[in-house]
Image (cartoon, rainbow, N blue to C red):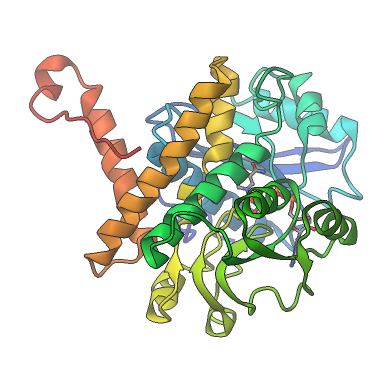
Length: 365
Ligand code: NAD
């Protein structure tokens, strides 16, 4: 297993491995870039096949958080943590408290939030040991950031449909949602309320049944959802679903979903474009959750949060417009825009005598 030369290393500032024999905790915390603020990102629990897979995942995810927060115009850096284990079998209160100790030992350089395999209750157990946890407050924001993520993805889908199809809503569009969990369910709800025909698949039968019964989602087998002939495919389960095996089988015109790291490799975005498929960068359209986390941490009002989430569609439209006029993929254009923002923000924070010549505000969000 390589660390400093890992493909997703990309100049990470901090990567720490932690273990606790008493609870069986094995975890990694990564902070990619803290030039805009502490590395804030979800704590994921997953039964990784080996340590290298866990490291690869945490590095890619924390790097994505840097770009996500920058594109959303948030004063936060990119960070992430993973716990190696099966959340259904290995998770205990003591293990989550031990994870809280591990987070606390980083002195605030990393702030944990909810992610796949962890929920608000787990975060509260961590919070018993550290203040560096977010997304747990029982205030007007409701704690769980997933509905905000879903709202941002929904607005992203509408913006993409406007850009590609020239339609102002998703009414009568066919949308396939892969994964009807915390985010996918609320995304399906927005789409149904907007008049879309929604197909859904989930390996968890209870989650699928809930969406079918409450929302009128049309059930599809998990093996068939990616290849469905639809206007929009919304991956809302796990990452790397867009790869050299699946892309040839897709029959959607637009891919826009919540899952992090949907592209198995950076080249897969170009591959999608070769197939005429418009790809909405995940770290741009799924930023509603991290925006929510910021408003919760700062105690800012819900109405301002909603307006902030709504700017996702403005940024996405700008990325799609720039992509149309370039040879780059939409993912590359979005990353370049985030790097531009990081650079300009760093310049703007220089002392006035040095920054004055170079600093300029970039209105991307
Ligand atoms: P979740 O665990 O609540 O939901 C995921 C759902 O996908 C589950 O119901 C699961 O059974 C299902 N699933 C897993 N594998 C599947 C498969 N092969 N086919 C069909 N369904 C499958 O997770 P979530 O919080 O809804 O997050 C979904 C994705 O969005 C994750 O990739 C997460 O990292 C990303 N994300 C979530 C948030 C958030 O606010 N929760 C924010 C940004 C990004």
